[in-house]
Amino acid sequence: MRRICTLLIFFLAIRPGATFAQTDALSLTLSKAESLFLKYNYDLLASNYEIDQAKAEIITAKLFDNPTLEYENLFYNHETKKFLQTSYAYGQYAASISQLFKLAGKRNKNIKLAQTGVKLAEYEYFDLMRTLKFELVNTFYKTYFSAQSVKLYQEQISSTDQLLKAYNIQLKMGNVATKDVIRIKSLLINLKAEQAGLLNDLEDHYKDLKLLCGLDANISLSLIVDQADFKNGLLDKVPYSCLLDSARANRADLKLAKTDLLYNERNLKLQKAMAIPDIEIGLSYDLKGNYPEKYTGLGIKIPIPLFSRNQGEIKKAQVGIAAADMNIKKQEALLENEVFNSYKTALRNEKLYEEIDPAFSTDFNTLISALIKNFKARNISLIEFLDLYDAYKENTLQLNKLQFERMSTRAELNYVTGSNIFK
Image (cartoon, rainbow, N blue to C red; front, top):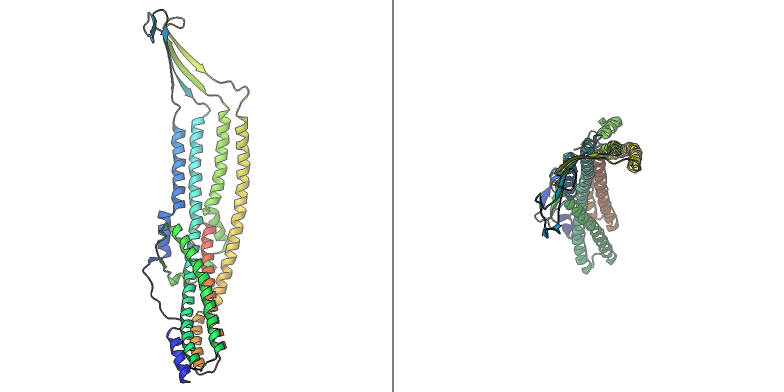
């Protein structure tokens, strides 16, 4: 009995709840991660430049066409055997200046089309932000709970390793059976193998989080979560109809689809206007090559729309309107289905979480302590002890998974509604 007590002293000292030394790391809350994301995310920064490019198109659309200046001079006078003479007696030159005037409001229509292009770029930016922000929140909580699971494995590996050392001592003294030592070794190997898989996943999560926040690869992260965030939210107080209305009012992808329709409508007006010829007015002067000498003339150019009346571009614009209208219907159907599915999933996860007794984890830890006492008193076998200890691990992992899925579905509701219902 004394030897068994000695054996358990090692195990009790490092049972779940023990602390581990941690290296210095960047403490990162979700709000801080979102702040870094908005400032340094490469995809957002690149998309923001596209908005500036679209705004530059407005500047281009507002500009008038440049006037055209033409000049022609006598190159070589074979009579005088001189080059480039310009005098009235021996030279000759002609010059003209012309300006193109666009008709049918083409300039204004181009400006409106460019302004709509800016709106398209802005909605693409906001939709990208909505998507990446959901990915950020989802990755943040996935990383946090993965780290908690890795910590659990580390605690159990340390505990099992100490238990194995104690049993090896007792084995040499002939107080325990070899099969018990083999069972503990097998458990330790399984724990290390499972932890290795989790560590690989955790490193991938850290990589994704750093990329989203624009952080250097060599930075070590320590995620901090306010436990108040895990409390029941307002989901049961927000009806589905309100979520659907919020999605219709705030979803950037739906606004993008509607703006695309407007863009095609304005493009059709522009293409119809392009079928109307523009007028070019010019003023010319000719020293001696025309009648009378020192000729001054006023000219007008206008193409005759005999063959090309911009039929192809008009047809393309009409097809673009039909396609954009169909895309709006598709986005509306997609929106409704996403909101409904996310709402049902969130309700299911909330209900499952509420059904778990808040004291369950505490009771389970108390059960572990009682289990150790029973093992010390030899009321249970090593196999029973290890089985229940493994059940403790599975219980904690399942709770971590459930809490992650719960927070993930909340983030998904924000994503599908285009709002911040859950902060």
